[in-house]
Length: 376
Image (cartoon, rainbow, N blue to C red; front, side, top):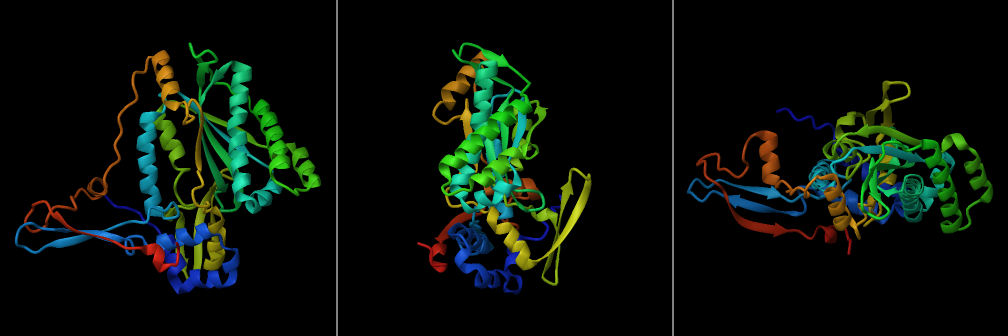
């Protein structure tokens, strides 16, 4: 099977000393989490150590399997994490229809979020989840399963903060004695609640914000966009659909079409114009567009609420499955690196090519990569 890998972020950052040059220009303005994630990507499969496997027979064959960085800014590692997340939540999610809802704010407020990342992104995702929970409870009398993914980028890599929500089509009644089905969420009603919550959160949680700016943003009603998307028919479809929005860099390697003369060309789909748009930037400008989308350390990009809230999830989902006649949650397993390679190449990486016997682990070496870059 042919694997299309595209041009790596690592290659762009390291060629011509692009990252070093960027640091010289903007060093004092670069967030610590950016330094950490870029360092991890540079050292992926080279600087974290390895496991060594050797043939138990006398042919002398051995090979080293390097450790990976597991950063969300690394395209290969991000894909592995996304695949593992999908396996887990295909088994965890209630097998009912879901709706995909996108909450956006006016572009006037994007710079405020960028300058107040932790507070701003947190208030966005909390307001989006609470908007849905308030609406379904007060209008239809139930609590749905809700998962939220916070995004800072649009397809063209601009800083564009918005929230993706997956919401079950129905939920548990207030007394938790029945499942109330519902496939209709009114986008205008959601938008009214969303706008009110965001304005209140901005005024309360972000000090010294301009009242004039907030009033201007509030009055631009057309820029408060709540899109209630198509209904997704099963948990597996839901997870695969939203999986592309999680645990990965802002751009997939396959969207980077060329890197020549220190110019990066990538493409994106313009859904309004229904055409593919090519964008060419200098490597420095490309890096500048990417870095704002690296989240701060320990920031939770994915949140859960309603029936998926961590404090009640096990009991709530068990009750919902009983009322729906769905049975118990499925078991799930994360594929090992060995299994992933077998699936990708149809070859077992731990079989000696000479003797056709299984290699045995003979050494493990861990490298303190953080000390290399001066992290404590």
